[in-house]
Length: 386
Image (cartoon, rainbow, N blue to C red; front, side):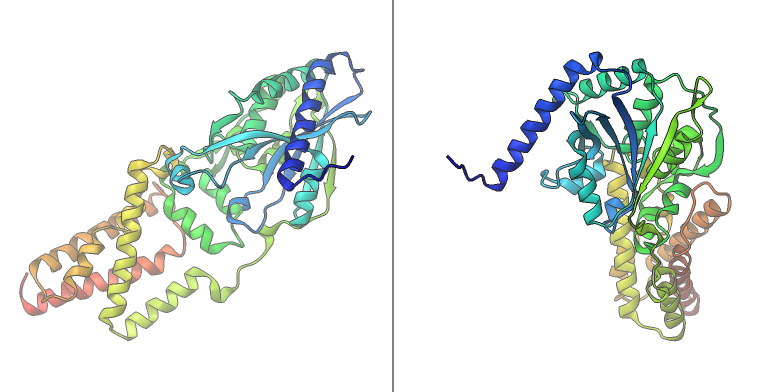
């Protein structure tokens, strides 16, 4: 008798097979010969989607008899979650640990032409048991969900903590003269508009120097640092296999589409031509963006999004300026321009003293706002209404 299964039934069947295999494995791995279990760290290159820009990490668990070959993946989330983006910004979006067959995991990344680096770990039976016991515990329904934090709790930090917390490793932690922002930007060289948005939304919390351990919040850094780790004088990584693919972060952004170039051209046009409509549009965009930054600061539980001094130049007060643009020049308009320019001087001071870092594309925008503010102040002096 043949039974035709729809896509949902097939997916459900596959999931039950995987779970059954895991449960079987969880009860039997203690009696396997010591050379039958292998645990590997998987590092996946970046993809074309914005949320894949920094790559991905997962853990492969295999036995040589092919009774089990699965990947533990801490980077799963549900796009259909109600209020998905709001929860993500607020720090209330739940990620979860999932398990899938290795062949399916590899095929998914192969379909996207993304590279996978597999690093086989040199573990004792005791280390393997500890890691698998911990994974089994974390996969329980009541434990598998966690609140995502980009720098402190993600698919890579979960694996870092799993490995470092269950193996007596030899690791010399030290400052690396880089910040979270520096490391984030390294992966965004070919994605200039995403880089602009990320640097706009991030506050000063990402601008302090970090150490080697903290740097492993990104897949590439975990991949590189784990090569330097030793266990009882022997390297933790005993072999590395690279599965062909492309690292999308190496792709370049067209010079003409670079935001710094576009905003610089806009600055030149504004110097040459005076248009109240363009000024209105710029003030409106800056004001709305500043209002969003303020709301994010107030609502988000992500510390990386708080204390954002970009609000000094990307200021909600520009919304008030848009209203005043089409009225006769008044003291309020002049004083508002002076206040906004003082804020710009403040952010430049913050950039100079590296209290919070900046993005090169910010400079022409700040120059445009400065030009408009000085034009307004100059008009006030000319009309003698100061």
